[in-house]
Length: 284
Image 1 (cartoon, rainbow, N blue to C red):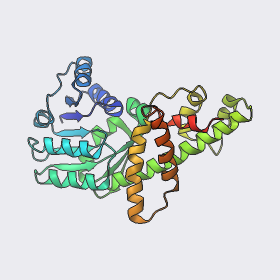
Image 2: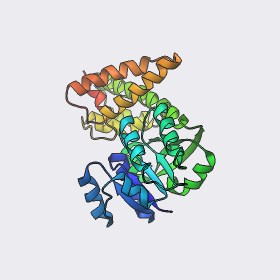
Image 3: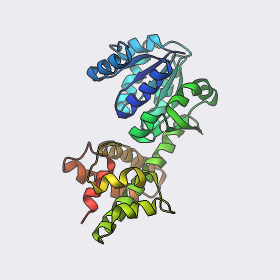
Image 4: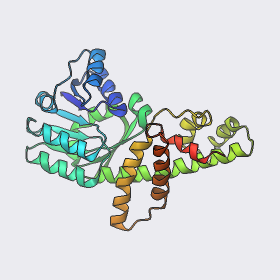
C-alpha cells in the first residue's frame, strides 16, 4: 500500500508526518515547493514535481487543500496519470457539488473516490486524532481504513458521495456558534472583574464545557491567537454553508453573524489568526 499526500498546509503536514511515521508515505506534493522540500528533508523523501508524477507512484492519494477550485485542479491533474483501482481521498472542506464532480472525473479513470473532510484542527492533525466524516462507498472506506486510522481517531461513514461534506458543514456551523458563545461569555466575565482562569476551570467541569473553551480559553485571555484554524478558512467554509442553507431554506442566523464578524477581523488584518480572535470584537 503506497500512499501519497497532496497539500502540506497546517492540517496536511500533520497528517503526512503521521503517515510517514507509519512507513506508508511514498510521495508528497505541495504547490509551494519549499514546504515540500523542507518536509522531504525531514523524512528523507524527494518531493514530486507535479501531481501527475505523484499519481503515477502510489495506490492511495490524500488531498488536503484550501478551496474548491484547488481540489478540482488537483483532481484533473492526477486524472492524467493515475492508475485504475487507485483510491483518492479528499480531506479538504469543499462543497457537495465539488465532491460529486471529483468523483465523476475519477470514475472515468476507474478510480475510487471518498470525500472525507476532517475536524480537530492543527492539534488533531498533529496527534492523529482527527474526526473524519466520510462520503462514498463503504467497501472503499474499508479498503483505506488502515490509512485513515493513522490520522484519525473517529472515522464515520456518513453516506453517499458528498455527504461527508454535508456533515462537515454541520460541524462548521456548530463551531461558529460555539465560537460566538465562548468569546462573548469570556468577554462578559472579564468585564465583571472575575478571576477568569478560575472561571474557565470550573466551567470546564460542568454542562457548558467544550473543546473550544478548554483549548482556546486561556490563550484568548492572553490575547494570543495562533492558529489553530484560521479566520479566513472558516469564513470560506461558512460561505459554502450559507449557500447550502439558502438552497434548502434552512436558518442562517449563526452563519450570517459569524461571517459579518469575520469580515471585520479580516479588514483589521487578522485573517490568518485563529478563529478565537473573534474575542477581539467581544471584549470591552
